[in-house]
Length: 362
Image (tube, rainbow, N blue to C red; front, side, top):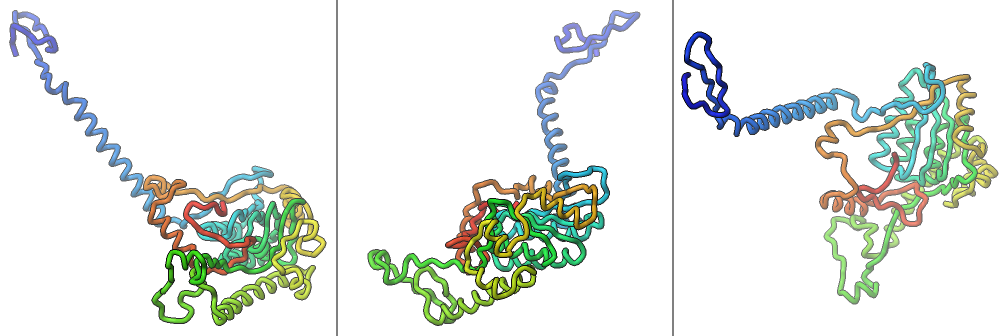
């Protein structure tokens, strides 16, 4: 194209052998919108990449074992094929942490390179059902691999219950400052606004639930327990209590049932008193328990490993890993769950209030 007045942005190409020049005109509108086109393309590509990552993560989550623990090096010989696994039970024994512990136990049981397990307990106990689930899986584990127990600051009630899963031949170590014992059962119940309370009379409050049976609103905080209700709950408590005693009777060769019953007052014991009463075997630390485990397995060297549970990519991208503040719906759900009667092997005067975000195991 020939022109006499080229635009400042035009590219002028001289033609050899003639008076003409070829001018490649620059369209200013393309320059103004080039950045917008680039931004759109970049955004589309980014969204496409993100969508593919989410779908790939969902695919992996669907076809992989859910929540499989990740193994990490703890100590010992890094080159050794023989492993000793450390399984930690910390905080209150309750969902969702119970499932993590169960998977850790299963992982140690299935791994042929794991020759023994060190069970480290630092827990005040928790729900009866969760404590027994862990105990049951430990019984399966001890049938094929030795377990040594190391108690840290607190291994009380349900924390002591799960320790019995190691079996009568297992050695139980407790640190010099460990508290253990607290053998017993508690069902949290609060009576803070009964019909005869001064506050109820002052505000004119009266609970009148619609129910289909005598015991449907049992353990309501708005009235006292009836005599019949006390009998019902006493029966449930007694059964859980007797189960606790039988578990200890099976798990401790140093004690008979009569001795256990005398100790099962809910009292918590220091490490020294626990050893004197046959509740533990040795006063020592985690490294002492690990030395004992090596002795039982006959290993001179071993790679000591631990298990961790991490949030998947999909959970991170979708915000499933919640922060400390819970949505209103979850908070209400937590408050409602707190009213559900639960028998607990728990070292506490009032039981557990399982609100979202409350600290627990791991």
